[in-house]
Image 1 (tube, rainbow, N blue to C red):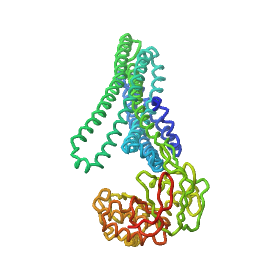
Image 2: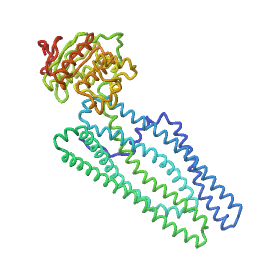
Image 3: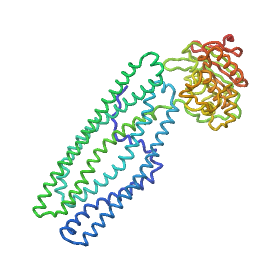
Image 4: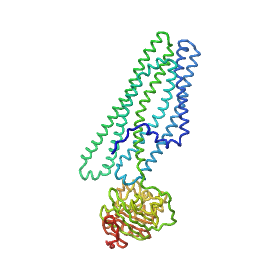
Length: 552
């Protein structure tokens, strides 16, 4: 894999499409922040008048108006900062929510072959940790960055007006500090990226390990899994410590520059006060601006580190959006008033690393049931994926009622073709909630009717447990059948519907299927014969051929 380009702050330009809807309120926040920052710059000048006229000059009026001006500036700054910070946080949260939503929608649309190669923990880390990091940076850093830039410009102008010589003395160390900091920040970006990757590795390991916990216990592999987790965790800790050390070094550079510069300004400015060429109030005002000059510089150098870590997370987020969508909605969709359920596969070729289907063809008449057999790895499940457009064939065409499925809207196609997988996926919740997953707006009566059609005798309020663990294999299969029937599809595809069932349960499921397949096109995929009647097909060497009807 080619080495990626270093992370740059230009990554933030990719957020502009998400920011455009909020351009007007963001402009208002920026304007108010500039006004508030400008008002804050007046503070040292007020202090100068307070010292030189109010205290040293013993002028009560000057003392009163400077104290009032200080109070007014403080209240104004508090109110404007509170309003702008709250408004900005609200907007940034909406922007980040839109980004996370687009990432999630994109993950639902990318090819299953990419999901098969990727690690689930990495997806979760990018959707959760990286988005949260960008949220932290956007909420805490961007607004502070803008305020510090305005403060920096204002302080430079005012300091030059007070004493150009002291100003040059106060910034003499900045070029060296900036150079050293930039070198440290490049290393920081690499360490942050490595820490994010190792964090996602831990997430993937935990998902796999906890999902297979039963196997771990039965295989007496608990100690081995603990050791593996320890290695992953140590790798993460090493990356985190390297990142923390680099971050501490980056923070120490501006702090050292500020301390040395302040000492030099104190010495030179104090000498001028003693010589009578500068008033005490002027020195205090200059030192205040000096603090407001170097403090923004220090903050900006520290904020640069936060921006770099945010840029790392942004890149990881946008890497997901760069994954191409293989199956697209049709540019010119067809509209069919009523679907019958006739399926045709014409000379279809498709594979992953090598062809699995090679010019395969079959024709399923509407309303009839077919059984498709074949060895493991022959391509039966791949054929199903092509029928519902999880993939598109490299060559050939799949048709539903004579229409190329690539011209049928995906929602319509998957409404008409329902697939019941070998291991049904159930979510934590009730039986009724799992049945309603295919059509959430269904009424309680419709849910009950679907359950009865699937011969499911469990009450709808029954809890199914994690991944359906509270139900038997036959009950899980019936919940999946009821869920498919709720959509009233024209085509019902069942992938190994009895593979996990015993003899009695197989007979019961077969009777249920005989009833629910009436009037629908049925395709039953099985390694073994369990279905009487209908036409039998076999997938061999990438080709589909008719065979003698299987018998029980």
